[in-house]
Image (tube, rainbow, N blue to C red; front, side, top):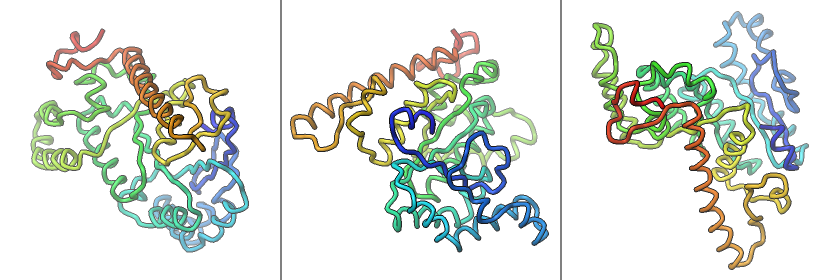
Amino acid sequence: MSKLLRKIDRKVVIVNLDPANECMTYKADIDIRDLIGLENVMDEHSLGPNGALVYCMEYLEKNLDWLLDQIKGDNATNFIFDLPGQVELYSHHDSLSNIFSKLSSVNHMQLCVVHLIDSHHCSDAGKFIAALMLSLNAMLKIGLPHINLLTKVDLLKQHADKIQFGIDFYTEVLDLNYLLDSLDSDNFTNKYKKLNSALVSIIEDYSLVSFHLVDMFKEQSLINVKKLVDKANGYVFKSDEGRHINSMLACAMGMSKNKQDTYYKLLEVENKIDQFLQHENTKAIQVQLLHKDPRASGAERLK
């Protein structure tokens, strides 16, 4: 994503906030490991990896001026924060939520959370319910614009024989009662039938969670994600970005009333284009929803 943003002349700063991130595939401009290291915490306080990670986040929260000073020293338009993968930090613990809140209020940053879920979770009803609940919990806990992505869609067709429904069922989060019916009927699963039903009811009551497909190896897919993030955090396009991406909208900054009307018409057209590309991506992974019968047989679901 940073490469794509730099291609369209946006100044990008990558911030690594994962103290356990030892094998980075990118160069971090700001790195939490310059403040505190996971291994040192584990050795000094006799903590395991998870406990040490929580300690590091609490330490960062208490020493947030270090991060704020690092950010203030850079005139970037985009900051990409690479965060730890420990789910408890987003669903139960408060430090990251407090850090995001300070960044928004003190630095006036327009933040957007991009939550990544492996698409193979679609092949297991129980795992998908858990992924939905985690996404909802994080959305409510963090309280920021939130985009949920199903990643590695290029590998999804490898699990096609285990996928109960068409891909639209999972991205749009349709009637989840079908998921409950698809759970294996064994003694272990029956034991948690009421729990699964209650979780599904909570997810549907909030009706907040949906997913977008992304293939990190396809630039068009990354462009679509960039548009989603821009829309979520209110980014206004620079005047020359349209030269770098053919589908980029006309510059919205400083527009007259007539130009604003044209902009919104273009936005409507772009949304239709995005829907078409999403449909093409769905066909590419050969999983398609049958709207009349979401529980059709595997032979009917795949083309």
